[in-house]
Length: 574
Image (tube, rainbow, N blue to C red; front, side, top):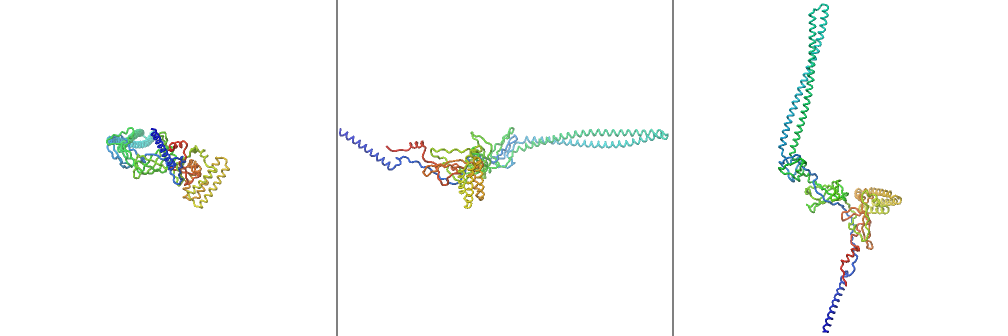
């Protein structure tokens, strides 16, 4: 029994010793073949990207609805039953073409009655005109009677005068006893007869004048009646014209040439136009020319201008890209879900009429295009090492921040540095010949000298900034005078990018990227940023050059992140 127990104890010790040897050998193998599993993790490497030169296309994205340039609503001014439809969906119609007709029986009956009333009134006017003519003829006759009476009066007056002289002569002869009493009496009788005839002629003249006054009154009455009848004729004619217009309106005509895109009426339907004109057809003027109404956010509307290029896609044609042009930015704003938006109209050519009204367009408006500029990945602008101070935000844009923007304009050494950066960009982008470059260098050297003098002599910051602005403008004008016509176009773009006067040029933003120094540590480089396309950003001013590498990620993590990573890293040991 003692021997058996001792034997079992030795067996257990041998097995334990064997296990220990196997574990030790395995650990040694791991250390030898996989040393990285047992060592502390090395410091992570930095991810780098190279700066390059190329185009930057800044864009604003939006959605909009495709609509015809002109859409005309065709309605009815009359109420009635539709008895004929002459156009259907997608029908091409011409201007003034009849597209539908309403029942016109009642209107035709009204037109016949109105025309009969007009004819009767015109006959009454003819009667009044004839009456006036009769009165005028009677007046002429009375005038002739007056003239005859006046002639009779003159004749009787002459005869009466002769009879008076005869009576006077007979009286003298009778007084001398020469004439007889009978002759004297005869002379007196003749005188009295002539006087009576004169009185009769005068009475006839007075009667003729009285008749003339009566006829003048009748003439005035007849003319007044004629005017009244003439007014009735005009009224009847207007009524006839109104009914004729209603009769023409029973024919619904297209006001423009185009295509019917909607038809909202059926044969036999009764149209009611008592309150408002009902919509019967919707006609697109020309589907070869379309418009897109896009809603642009207020944060992007300042970059959208008429004439800018637009590309867009529609769900009906996957993979295809269409083009358009910004036509109008409407001033009226709308508030949608607490966001201020502005409607922008984009003109689109649709020669094959593939784009249909109502389609949704996914738009990309190119707001800025920069050729051959220094570009940096946006990841380089976002990355910063742990514990680094964030970049101080730039003063807000706009006229209200003009003072703050002025404080950021370069002066002194920074101004000379900016001039050097401008010279480098000018040489790279314009590639002037040697003799031309020599003249440009002379202008820039003089500008740097004047900048230094302005900094030393001008104590007033405002006056110094104005002097700097004037020197910059003068330098740019002198350089432009040395360039060819082809170079001036690119120089204008370069000049805008380096403009000191931010109220006249586009304001730039500050940024910061990191490059690896000689010790392998990231070093901050402040830059001025221009346009961006979402992935790359233009660098306007910096000490960087194309081909230089900037940090876009990697490197040591913050303590919190490192501790988290350590907890997830496997460790082997005893």
